[in-house]
Image 1 (cartoon, rainbow, N blue to C red):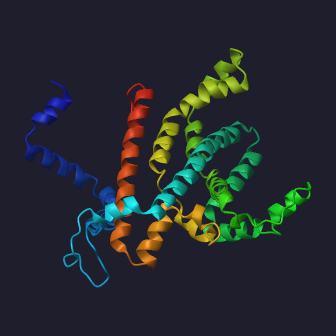
Image 2 (cartoon, rainbow, N blue to C red):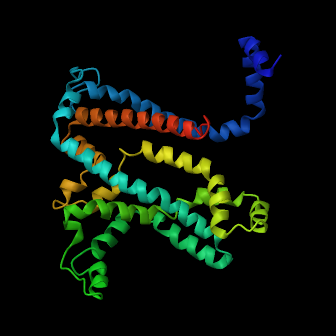
Length: 317
């Protein structure tokens, strides 16, 4: 009889006693994770009760029990709200550029860093690429506002090639998607290499030695050994990236947004922030957030199923 069958036939009381003995034996470890469990319950599970606001007409003077129930009315308003749908278009446009550039660049950068033979230079490159991640968007946003101004660094740089234009790029709404996407990739690409570098550190070096003996070039070794070894991590990051298509960087948006570029910079998170907190329409903002969360969960499931088909019915989640 297999071990699984034995566990299935074991009485519930016996399983509980065995679980309790294991818990008591590891009580120090269980105590260490207790603060994390409490924080997760407080900040992730208890707020779920507040989702009933999406089905109410709630005001600051109401309680959850007193607010009138309106059913799906808030969702019907969302379906007719042109400003909401414009924020959806902006979010998807910016996320698509970030996904295209920000997903592949960390992989390429990690492989390039890994292939650098000189240790000190490798550390310098890693430090310089990691550095922007540790700056807040308040700092980076101020730098971008200065660099992209009429007399800023970018216009001065292009001016040396005779391409100077008296344009404040952050005031050009048609340029905002690229400004937001490229600046986010610049900030996070180096940090995104950490997981890939960790995986590559565990690759058996004899695989490269054998391939070199067989006459494989550097590019062939990367394509035939390094990339397949990164397959699981690449798949996991792809699933998380696709599921986050409807999530946007609120900090970045609040720093870079201005009245001139707002038609292209208003994303779902900033729209929810403006409607929910600035205008006090908590029920509408909750309905928007709930709808986006459901769609993101569906994207997560669909992407996971798609990658399972590609990976011979094996899932990384």
